[in-house]
Image (cartoon, rainbow, N blue to C red):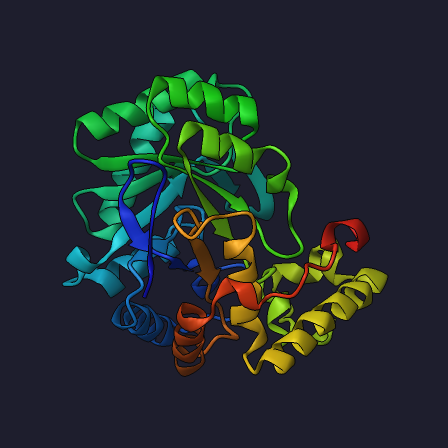
Length: 320
């Protein structure tokens, strides 16, 4: 497995990370035994970066990851997140909290659920507009001083927010959705990350599974799969985006590789030199079996990004 450095002076991690959200939430179905086996298979293939959050479940995904890495902590670069607040009485409701007190409570809960004494990369999951970012990152920085967290990150932050946060304490990584069909980061965030020396971690590089080519109908989603309610996967949008996916599939067939590694390799390589290609976090959910994921990881690790043809102008034709 190739490695990437997170930012200019950050740690080295596997070029591909494993996103664990779908093992416990959002994508329908749950099989903890299979999920733990999948996590172990990923570690065996050289994946070191595991990504979770306290809001996945909520809380159950961190517990699952904690069980999976017990006895394997030295092989894992562990990332988790705080800041999204869920309402147990309304599964669709979301809030945000970036207050210093909440930062403290959140990290203590995550450490306990994960069964570890420190977190390698601690992200603010979503920015709280009611709390100055300086206050939130200041509280996160104190966790670094105490040894409970090694590196700090932000997820889906605006350029000015990232710049202000970085002045309080070095931000090691910014996580944003980025793939062949989600390219907004190219306009301002990727250039800013290069300027500041902040690592860019792309999540959902397979377009929430759509770029794999495995999803052909909305009926492929379970009744409780959140993608059923996402505009990209509804009505005419579904078919228009499926037409785009078919172009990726056709290119993959021409190159004799599966669509997933081709799509992920394209996202990892765009606009980067060989020394600065960004790590990607591949999500695993119900539709990804342990054997399939292992084969796909091997293919991704061996697929040069240059296999991608001149890019389709996804952003111009993507229904939003």
